[in-house]
Image (cartoon, rainbow, N blue to C red):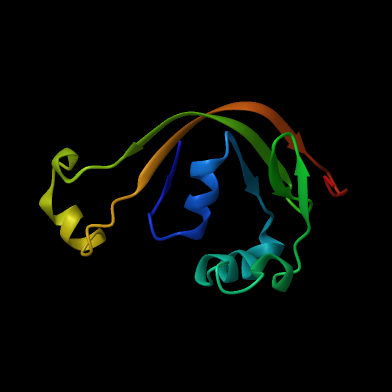
Length: 120
């Protein structure tokens, strides 16, 4: 399961594609991952700016530099709803704009792993 806020550019891709990937990066990519999480891809090519290499395969895209990639097929999508939260303080603290995450459930179809070589 993954959760994405509606404001994220990534959500547009998740909604239109049947597959998605999850990339696990080693600690040496901490700075790049922080950058990717703080800048929108709507406004710039943040992947290129971060120095990452996209690989298009298996009906999705992932980073060649990842140490582990899970290629998944979407099985279920659902919006989190205010009525489902058991504690009001969670809503007030984490969702002041009421921009609840969308949950995506996927089935892992393929696992790619590397030792010292790129996956690309």
